[in-house]
Length: 72
Figure 1 (cartoon, rainbow, N blue to C red):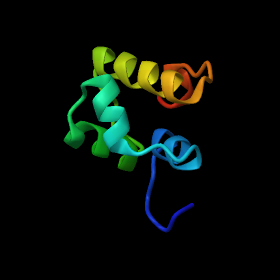
Figure 2: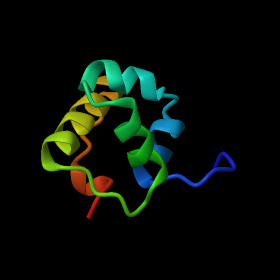
Figure 3: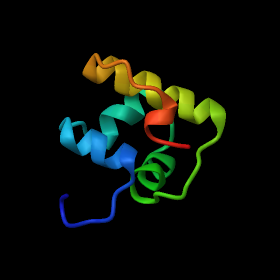
Figure 4: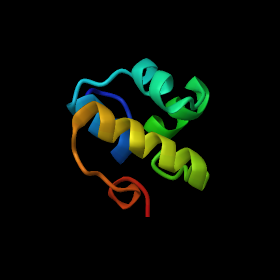
């Protein structure tokens, strides 16, 4: 989409104009993990991390996304 490899999570936040830094502030997940989650389609974050990221995205977009929307 933006000329770089992105995961479904990365594509979603790009589409909605959400900065990784904003997700970091809300989720309290490290910048390194957020970067990995956004770039690597095969990376599966820990359950607690996944929950925090989904909660942050929900708060920022108002959309009722689920972890299944990004990770299988």
